[in-house]
Image (cartoon, rainbow, N blue to C red):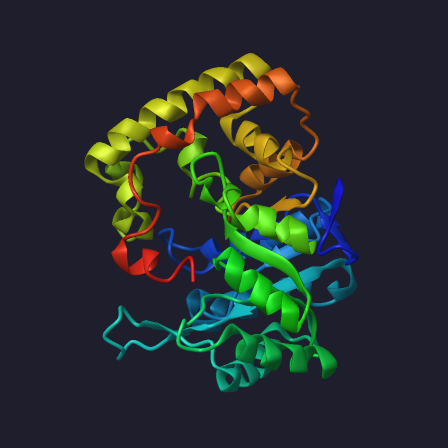
Length: 330
């Protein structure tokens, strides 16, 4: 597996990581046994970068990842997040953003216990409460570095200004945000700021939440409990328009001798050595497909053809519903 660096002078990780969220919830029924097998296969394949969060499955995902890395801790660059609290009594769909220093200090200890480790390699602020100064939150996160509980700090879905303010308090090694062929707003301000600061961009949903596989053409293709039903891009007219984009991507993939997934990942990897995608999957065949994309080299002409096939202006619909969009870009 090719390697990429986290932060300007940080450790190297596999060029393609593994997002573990879907192993616990959000994408329909889960299979814990199958997920553990996939996690083991990922490590065996040279995937060293595992991404989880305390809110995924209300702690289940961290416990699952902890079981997978037990006895193999030195092989893994382990990332988790805090900042979204799950409370079913809360009127905001059972979730609330809490980036307070007090919650930060409590959350890390709970995460370490669930993961069964004495430190995490990368600790992200999952979402930011704009009423809490980012300097206060990152100040508390920096305390965790000094205490040895955390090695590197990260942020998720923040603005370029927030990133710069945070970095002035403590180096921000990684910024996680949605980035793929059909979500490219990060290229305008956030990615340039990250490069200015030496912050690696960790791209979640690099296959467009599965849409760029080409297998989702109608709402019925998703499990009834799948949270993508709430996303505008997967609804009605938006979905019909977006399917046309994927049709062209499938044609190019066939021409280039790869799958649409591999083409989407290879395009993203080619956008810079400071970008690390973390596609999520629960199944070993899809894991292997993702891993193989790290070795795919596209020519300049092929990259241009892919970009032209999925122009930014052609994507229809917001990436989250109104409640979700209100939590990003803070």
